[in-house]
Length: 166
Image (cartoon, rainbow, N blue to C red; front, side, top):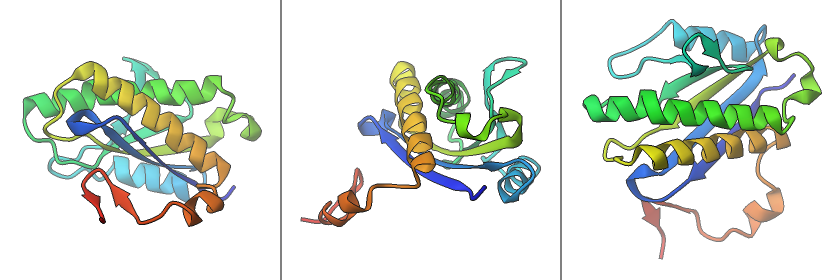
């Protein structure tokens, strides 16, 4: 299985979510990257297993890697709380939508999520909902093989929430 790369963005303002995903086999390069990231925390960046609730990890096993350095207690709670729960919900949505079914057993897959939570975020429910939606969008795109090339060719000038070329 070739790794599947995805990207998803949901919401606006400080509570928006940006997710990057890599889905692959546990016994392949994605599994190696998953274990390496889990075993290599750094100051402000501590990858962890995404859980539905304590002692109930989501399937496929999913690694949460924060892209923003934790900036205080509130940001930490939003990252490890609402954003993590949103990622879990997005993975479960993908599972319920049968997006992983082509590979059969979920215990052969590993998913890495790189998650942006803005240090200025403040609304837990929006952080949760946006991370849920962005996670599902990223997984969907990854499994589809990336964005539609026709859409990419006709999308105009590149832009994002932090920059728009006028």
